[in-house]
Image (cartoon, rainbow, N blue to C red; front, top):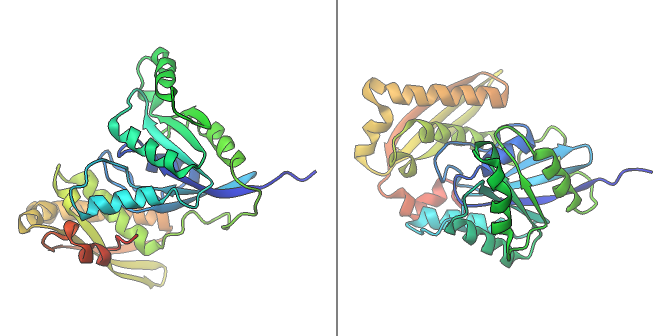
Length: 297
């Protein structure tokens, strides 16, 4: 008897900084979503393709759902996150072990409204000092809420993810794989290059500037075995430009080097990367600028 193969889409939803992108990368087995300790690192919906012998999961990584609607960028991210639950077979609500905040409740409400089966993933259990308190925490947050299954995991260490995969594949319809085994995302290398530069901004800059910065890829060309890429880091104020560039250009050099190494690892080829920093006043609250920089529903 031939085993049934299943395939379908899963929205990965939750408040900022609970480890949604780390989970997607762990299931895909490659870095398709950028990761940093800062909230709102993920700004776009992004598809991670996770292929297993028994099925294929199309994981829709989303920006964190949050109550604040400070500017057009925040509103765009909330729309992207909430829109991800349409046309999926199931959803994963990712929360942090030991913490249930108002934005977790917001994310749950969005999923409940969608009517799709919802699996609760309690992430970062490896950081939960007293494991004995985990069961009471699970009992408390699941009281009065409907979840198809509950999975405590560590996405960073890929612990507990095998059982999660089995649960998710069981929720998918019988179907052939929609993508090839070697495909890991539906996004272009050009898009991923911009994200890898932005990841370095999130990792290397202070509190305010990363949220005021975005990246535009001006050139993405193949030159034999090498990729030649030109990236512009856009900030909102003239005063932010020297912060990105750093003394003697040192910070921009470090950003470029980190991004280039990540690109070479992901793309499997040499990369020549040039970066500049320019100013576009108030771009994050400007719908036209957001469209130009790829923030479109």
